[in-house]
Image 1 (cartoon, rainbow, N blue to C red):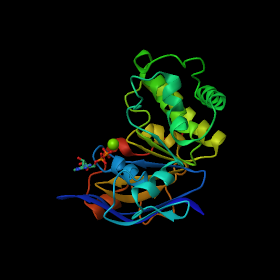
Image 2 (image 1 turned 180 degrees about the vertical axis):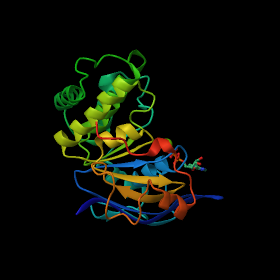
Image 3 (image 1 turned 135 degrees about the horizontal axis):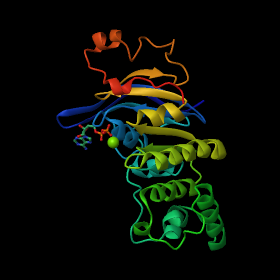
Length: 259
Ligand SMILES: Nc1ncnc2c1ncn2[C@@H]1O[C@H](COP(=O)(O)OP(=O)(O)O)[C@@H](O)[C@H]1O
Ligand SMILES: [Mg+2]
């Protein structure tokens, strides 16, 4: 079964269709990237998947359960299976690393203090941040904050991890470290991962599948290990697409040679 299946998803706010008839599925354990320029609807798609935005129509099945139309409390239950790693690490500034990472555990899981401490230590080790428990977010660099954000998401043992621009604003070396960490996390914790990003280099390095979003539509899927995906209705990078869709494809989006 697919970990996530989206069918005919439309999301609109007054006067704007943000997502238009999105169809996609992600096999369990895979790392799917959604790529597209700023403002095309990537964050909105993640919000719909996380149940933070309400689609106008369509289905979003998570492990076989359609979350569209569920009540808030039912969605809260499903959200416990998801880890969200937001664009800005979104740590609580007034809480230290320990309290940030243990936040969800204390609120949602009935476990004793010692077990919480063990989980925090393990997850911090996973992200290369052992020993930082007492530090506050303001004492951490951007890359370190992202690591702690990931540790916090992992503490809840999610089966689905959603990353919003996980490497944006980081210098290239740190960004690459975070990429490696995302791939490691996928292997170690057997999670299904969805990453939205406009960082094409990063995506081609780590994704198993890529969906390309333009103006609220997923217009093509490709396999980053192949230059072209044979099952595609058209070559998303080529002249044919541009003619068909009447959209300019920025040169920066051409696939890069494998590094
Ligand atoms: N709640 C909202 N109300 C009105 N417009 C919105 C809302 N959320 C997103 N948008 C608009 O929808 C478009 C897509 O936004 P977003 O999903 O944040 O794109 P991305 O993450 O790809 O940059 C943008 O034009 C944004 O301004
Ligand atoms: Mg965004």
